[in-house]
Length: 206
Image 1 (cartoon, rainbow, N blue to C red):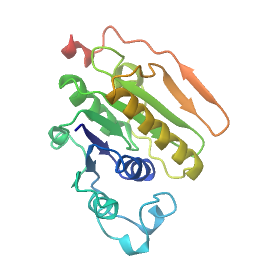
Image 2 (cartoon, rainbow, N blue to C red; image 1 turned 180 degrees about the horizontal axis):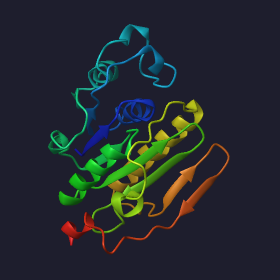
Image 3 (cartoon, helix red, strand yellow; image 1 turned 60 degrees about the vertical axis):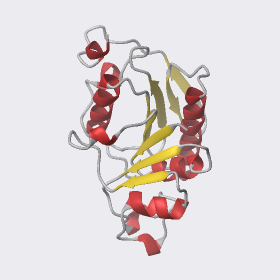
């Protein structure tokens, strides 16, 4: 049975973990945050009774799946080695964590799906070490932090569903989408991206 790591149990992570908990796979849930009242409007798993509890551990309890392991921690340089899995799903909200995931994934030949969400736009890109551009190839010039405060629940549902579909396609070894995809509620945009031939992260996978 395949093992999927979900990093971040927020607006996307709660939805993605809920969908994947119904599938035949092992899940690793990572989040070092506690549930706050302000989270409830966008994180569909939790209620007021969950306030003050660990997001990852409480998600595991709510989902009631024996194939789930929860880690009450953020992914950092010190904890990234816990990502021992067949696929990583990015449900985080900042670039710093994504750069850490990317470097670990490329070095260890682990595919991962970058996913971001704002109030109006969602973005997805499947990264396969040695076969596609890595995250650093595309986003190295961006600002380090990009926290998401407001999200559209309908867009969050859409992006989570697409992320899970893409994960299932990839794990079944079916053709996956190789473009960087942007979504709104009204339209989609696919962008072809190229590997940076001077990328210091991709260099380790040659």
